[in-house]
Image (cartoon, rainbow, N blue to C red; front, top):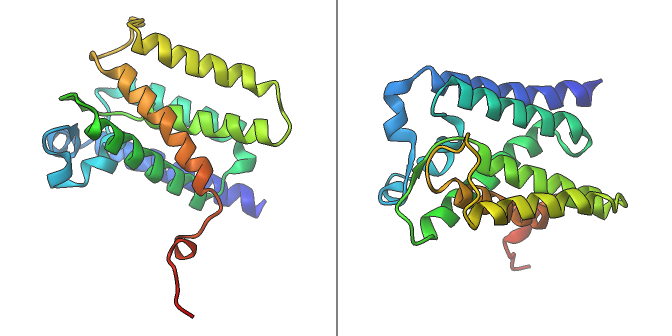
Length: 189
């Protein structure tokens, strides 16, 4: 029961932060990702993922995050969920900054693609080989988006790049799982 409570605390914290930021529309311009200013400001690398175009956009992102967290709850603790969101969000934003595009965006969909791919990779590694089908379908969907397929709910011309960057961030999540930052720092004995 303790793990269950710890798990829910992270999800509720993330949802509350997103709702709070959504209630502050005058902050959105400052907290949104813009290729030309993101590195000079810094915070949009993280904050852009927690604000949304409108409440419908927020609702769909919240549902996606909640479904991922519920279905794959055995992989999460509050600490890992928040770290995964921060790592995936930062990696997604940096990849988009490196892309030769001038784009602005808000929302969690790129990070959701990263978290979903991470969970599928974990399932595959734990013996659920049939999850390859879902992972292949997810990658094929993103490739189709990059090639020009645009569902009617897409807002903006660069959503496919956001989803692709999020997908790539899943590799970072998988590589860094269960590693402590202190382990990455060499120590002279």
